[in-house]
Length: 250
Figure 1: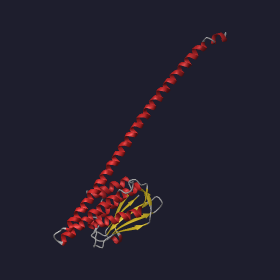
Figure 2 (figure 1 turned 90 degrees about the horizontal axis):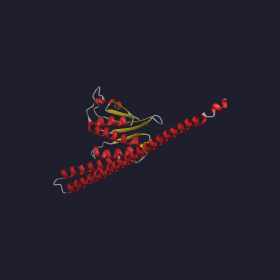
Figure 3 (figure 1 turned 90 degrees about the vertical axis):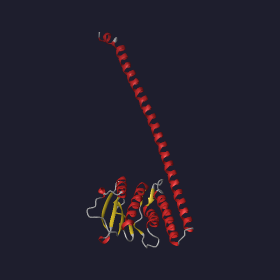
Figure 4 (figure 1 turned 180 degrees about the horizontal axis):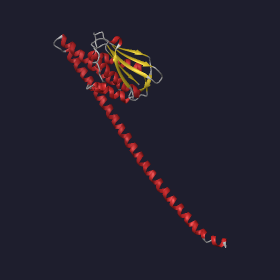
């Protein structure tokens, strides 16, 4: 009796199981197709992003090339004009202007020299950058210089480039107010903790100065770059209480 009652039910159970299998297969196929379509869209977007990045890189390189060429033309024109100046004083001023424009071009190249590098020996990079800045900011016979102190350290180029721009802004600001040398110091307190300081002997900042409240474009640029590298900016009086010391910990 039991055997006879169960035999007719087997085909029904089989059909139910087969139906479930077919539904599961259909759902699997639909999911697979959706995933493949999503993957294809992702590949298209990645390719478009890569092409956009390449176009932006080419445009930046073209802009850099045009800028450097323009500066070189200006240097050539100033140099030629200095040779035909009507007075020695005018000739000297034109030659000074030519040197300044030439130094500006070197600084600009130096700041972008690491665009495609991974690591850089930072002290050597700063020395070259500051030599260019010194020629741009100080008179040849002023006796002032930018002094680089500290240890040699290798850091990622992704840090070195914004730090180079920070140094450029701080030294340019110091040259406006300081009378004497500007010192750039690199300190490595541990394999991962480093700091970069720019010190001058100028009149110093007003009491209670807050960088975030500054309306100056230079300070806004510095704060933006410090935030970009996840660093920390501190400001204190310079050595012997004279001037100002800006320090970026990174």
